[in-house]
Length: 326
Ligand SMILES: Nc1ncnc2c1ncn2[C@@H]1O[C@H](COP(=O)(O)OP(=O)(O)O)[C@@H](O)[C@H]1O
Ligand SMILES: N[C@@H](CCOP(=O)(O)O)C(=O)O
Image (tube, rainbow, N blue to C red; front, side, top):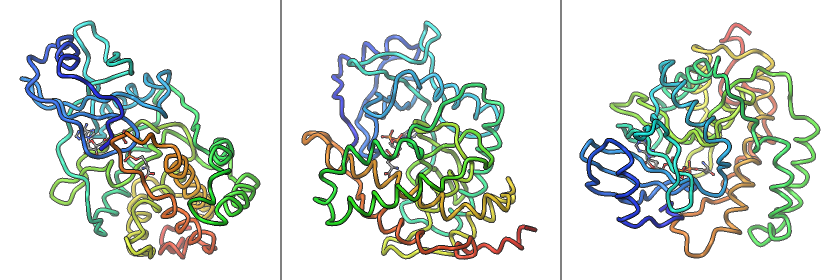
């Protein structure tokens, strides 16, 4: 359960009193997520999500995240909307943390990923990228290639406690990525954490996206690579080429991928693997003992990294560039 900050009933009541939402009916910590403290808050006006922003969220970035959710909704993406209190402000403080109420999105994230989820995801991701165009605020990706070495150095002395040899393997991969990371691919607003638990479906169709708290400006194809990693590997570690093909082909139908983006995908997938490996490794070694959170396995992403290190062309992701007219 991701609840780092405990909130008393009295704190919740006085927080909700700032909104025109009636009395609090219930408030429960949500047993999912790892980054922020989330509560399902029911008031006389209905259900909402109360989020208290924790360690990785810089309060200075909150106007970007909240503004982006409004911009995307205005451009056809179903996502939570910040709720404004009586003074017109959405961003507030609760128990010493920045806190926001957002609307509750109906739907369920897929516990077992089917090929049709990957098809819906591909189209949804491309629509998100198109809808992000024109958003006036900017946010650099603090967890892109320049951010990986400091993160590595923070865990390096203890990395081999998790797996012998991990420190050297990460150092070598970082050297490679820093030398080869592409700079001139199409860029725009990316979600940057579009894992299955952030994508809701109803009756098999994508119904909405949540958790925009890593969103930033970066290479659009990097977001595709993040999804390849998060959606197209089976629980036994094997890569599912059918899911990858559906993801890529349905993405490209809404936003065509250039030959340069396709050629860069194996490298971008390696970068995406090391990014999640490094944050998971840091959390593995540093999560406070009492925190109600289930840490995620860093080695899952070492396995994914090893897979992409062997990939030479996008054909190994199930896509024939000729099928896209390239
Ligand atoms: N707007 C929302 N509507 C419905 N459920 C939500 C909403 N926001 C979060 N949740 C629920 O809370 C869980 C954790 O939220 P998430 O934003 O992923 O947390 P974290 O910021 O810790 O990554 C989600 O998996 C989902 O079940
Ligand atoms: N998706 C990241 C961690 C953040 O996940 P969330 O569930 O809190 O959105 C990972 O898997 O490492």
